[in-house]
Length: 77
Image 1 (spheres, rainbow, N blue to C red):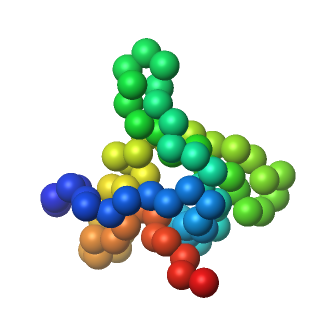
Image 2: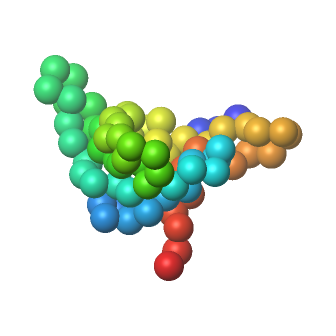
């Protein structure tokens, strides 16, 4: 499976995780040691936790039930 992606992440935009929960991207940050780009995002449910995930992982495609889908999909409003 080819995980390369040309999508970009937009801060202040909502995204839906493939498991169905919604999140708001707050910032794109850099890891202090590796300079790897990271996505800082907030859950839009429960305790509204703040999470960090590598940008490449946020944008990657995954296989679920035989289909290749985006891990996070932008919510168009």
